[in-house]
Image (cartoon, rainbow, N blue to C red):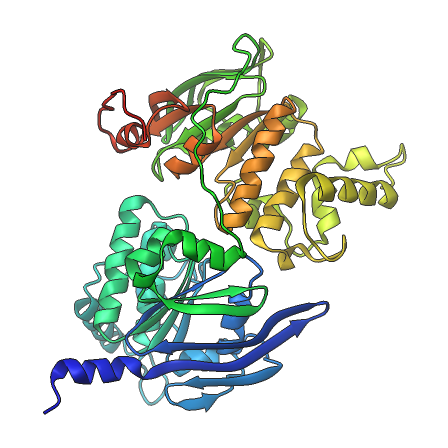
Length: 517
């Protein structure tokens, strides 16, 4: 007699998605090279790899955003060749992208049912049935979100929930999630995990794409790793550790070390001072000094005021009160132009939205912040000087690209971030503010950014390094400020333990002892 467990085991072996020797090439790049990949029914399957490894290309080939060059795609037991994402969505295969795809001015209910509304025979919207379907969806999956709230009034986590509800309304059997927890706070991530686990309990399969390995080990049953467009391997999550996965991703071991030795920083050379900076409602009287060549880390939970402080110092947000001093002189910053004039540059939190023009060639992005430095008296830009600058920063920052005229959107996340850094180095700043500089980039690229930050500080740049990740902040910074609810909650040097810093972040009282991690 077959038991229920045996039936479940047999069901779990059945594929919801199967790829056989999938290939896709772009001019000069083999993005996918005969990749075979399989996702079982009722499985959370992590798809990992560095930026540029082929994850996004694979997703787009599966859902029909790209036409594959060769290979086969099998979905729910039949061979398919979707002509567009809309067709794959209609067949129960949905993608939740890192960039949200909702219509901000429509309500939650309107976004969830968009394109799949209940209408009468003559095409008139049946609001009663629409509300009934929405309510049933909430009850089945445990969602609690107001149907008539405009999406643009929701937080990031709630908007992610709306995207999931939209997929579930179409009765998706497979959902691909691309960096789903980007920009979520720690508590929001925990809530999101509960939603993902609930989806699995309901028999929905998930391909989970992320750079955050802790999430992979918390959620997935199997891991598939891509590197340079090829499949490295598929492994059971329980059979590997973080180090093994990183080696699969980058082809070598990555030694994560935290050097707690205090670097020598000239405490008498204060480059910037902030005095009681207020920017309502998020920044509430922040004061600090920044020394020459120092890396000042600022950490805290999402919503603690970190980004708002950065934007205030750069003149994007005008401060309500407080003072900013540079080299012992008080300055007024009413706009980014003022900040640049005084030697301040900002690497923004959202590089795609605020740091780059993605449809520009990369050389144009690299020189954009300092065009006068490449122009003659008549305002004519010297293309030769621009290309020389590209060559210089390519070597200095190890930027990888096929041509200076490559469209910036087609670069990996790590190389896009290096372009943003190079762009602002052109302005010759004395203070470089870096807001979540490693967000959305792979582990190897993160190490490269850390190295760049340290090298810049050694060259005499003063860096404000803002990050929500405490281990990262502790690894990079000489001194660490913890922001909580818009105010400075604590200050540490780099020898402080991670537990003490986390305690300050979360609102506890640090417990100092002689032990270090």
